[in-house]
Length: 137
Image (tube, rainbow, N blue to C red):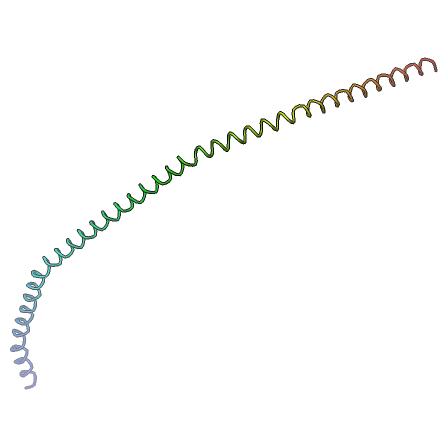
């Protein structure tokens, strides 16, 4: 008896559930049909906004770069003559030092050569003396 009652309930309930499922699916499809274009449009708008923000940011970055390069060029333009002058002064100072040192270096060299000649002459005299002593002795 119970089985028969269950079968009857199932027979009645099954079409209702199928209809509810069909209605729910239909409703979901309709919601999706309505929502999908909205979401696509929102996505398109968001992408468009992102592209615009990127374009603006790139433009700002380019402007910043242009300004920085311009500043660097100006600094270089200002600094270059100063650097050239410093270099010219340093070269002039180096030449002066060289001119001051050159006579001293020449004198030192002359003294060293004279000293070396004296040593050589003394050595030669010593060698001659030794040879003369051997010959005598």
